[in-house]
Image (cartoon, rainbow, N blue to C red; front, side, top):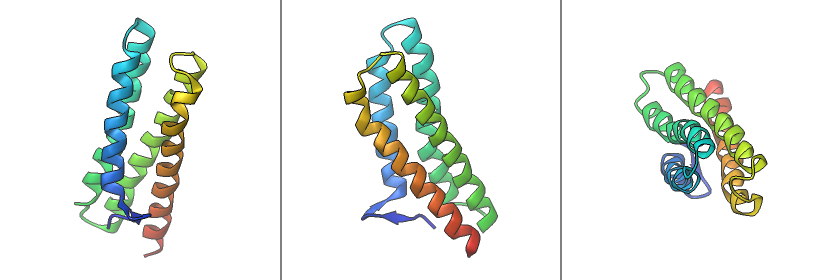
Length: 120
């Protein structure tokens, strides 16, 4: 059921995204604010891939859609924390732009998977 997007399986793409989130967390955890925000981002950002992976074993189409919806929810939350990191000037917007763009793309892909799955 996984969607192949531009030659890269969404499972692999969200796993790679999780690794980027982990690396970002290591950069921002240097003070109390960074640790608090970073832990929120770490939880949300890494759970996207976990939910996508779990969806692959969905017992039914509605179960698959539910788990992809959870991944979408976590992607949107991740975007919130990423934007907050930029607004709080924990990391420059230039450094954050690539991961913000990837978050937006993953969100769009997950939304598309949900829409296609609901139709089938």
